[in-house]
Image (tube, rainbow, N blue to C red; front, side, top):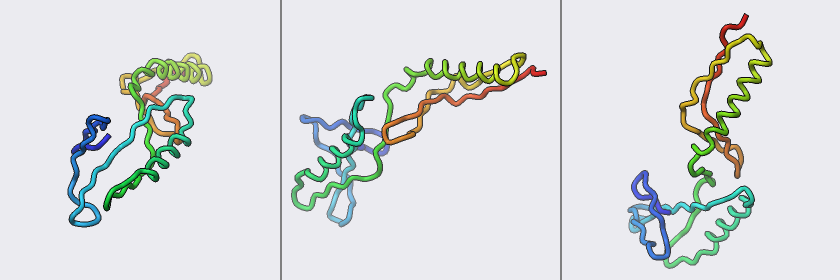
Length: 143
């Protein structure tokens, strides 16, 4: 994939491989383009091997003239349709609220807010994302 403007990615395929070049670079007579590689991974895939294969591809790529290929930044993870995990996450939040109520005081009323928020995630390892819904629990009516 190649970045177009600041927000859009354009798929690069065997039949559609032209990318818009941007002025600039190390010399005034050069152009550049940023290409992002997106790979589908499953739980069974070895992420370290996939990263090594990608870096090997970059090192082995044939270039012409003054062409250079440089990898930049770290590997990033993304998730397709994180909302499909919404009710699994809400079930875990519900378990947490029940456990809190049982641990502190059974006569307390437990109020959970924030469940209408979107599913969020953060990278917790090179090959792992932590999914969550930002929420708050409030105990009321405790004696």
